[in-house]
Length: 357
Image 1 (cartoon, rainbow, N blue to C red):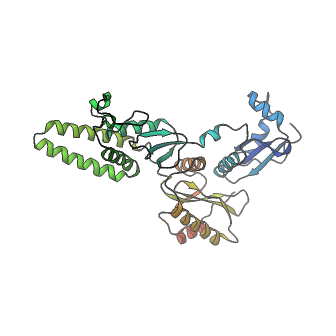
Image 2 (cartoon, rainbow, N blue to C red):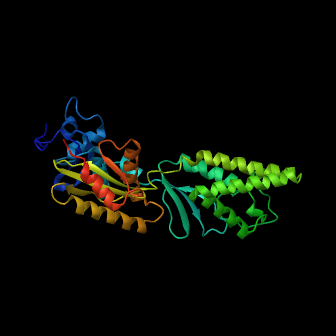
Image 3 (cartoon, helix red, strand yellow):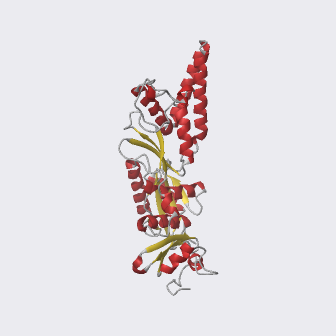
C-alpha cells in the first residue's frame, strides 16, 4: 500500500480522486464504502487493466470527501468529472452528450434528424434522450404518419424529376417534385413537432381523422376512407412508442432531502424540470426553515427561467437523479413541488428530516 493512500478513509459513501504531482486529477470515482474501494486498487494481484495500472503509476495523492448518501456521491462524481476532465474517466464524459430530435427551420423543406450535438440558430430540439435507437424509431414513424421527407440534403423542387417510392405508397407528399407547396409542407412538419411537444394534440388529431374517415366511408369514398385509416394506424403506432420518449421525472419539479455525512444535518437538492440545482446543507438545530424556504424560492425562479430543452452539460445530473427517483428514491425523502406549497415543504421536511444514523 503506497504511503500516500490515506489511512483514515471511512467505510462510508463518498467520492475519491486520484491526483498526480501538482494536483492534476487523473481519475474520479465514487463508492458506498470509500475505504474498501480505494484500498481495493492495491489488493490481490494488482490492477485489472493496463489503463488502471498506468493511472496508479502516475498517482501521488488521493483526495476524498465522505457523503451521507450514494446519490450525493454520484452527483459529486459527475460534477468533478465535468469540472476537471480527468484523462482516465471516459464513460461518464461520453454520457454527457445525449441524443436529440431536431427540426432545422432554416431549411425551406425541413426534415427530422437525430443528432448528438445540437445546432443553434433556427433549429428546434426535442430531448435529450438516453440512447439513439428510440428517437430514430420515432423519427421514422413521424415521417410516415405526417408524410415527411426522409431524404438528405436540401430540396429544390423539380416537376420533371421522379419521386422516390415513399411518395408512391403514400408516405411522403414529395416536395422534391413540387407535389406539395412550401407552406403546406411546413404545416406538415409543424404538426409533427406538435405531436412531440403535446400529447393532447395527438388525441385531437386522431379524433378528427376518425371523423373524416367515417364521413368519407358514409359518402362511399372508400379510397379516401382507407387512406385516412392508414394514417390513423400510423398514429396509433406512434402512440405505442411515446412512452420511450416521455420523461415523467423530468417534466416535474422535486425537492429531495438526503442524509448528510455529519449527524444532525441533511442535504437538500431541487430538481426543476430536469435541471439539478446546487445542493444545500441544512442544520436542523439552527436554520432549517430559512434554508428550505430559500431553496424553494430558487426552484420557483428556475422554473420561470428554464428553457424547454436540457443542455448537454445538464444531462448527466438529470439522468442520475431521474434514475434514483424511478428506483423509489432509496434513503431519501422526495416532495413534489408541483403539488406542495413552499410552506408545506418546509413543514414536512422539518417534521421528518432524513438523518444519518
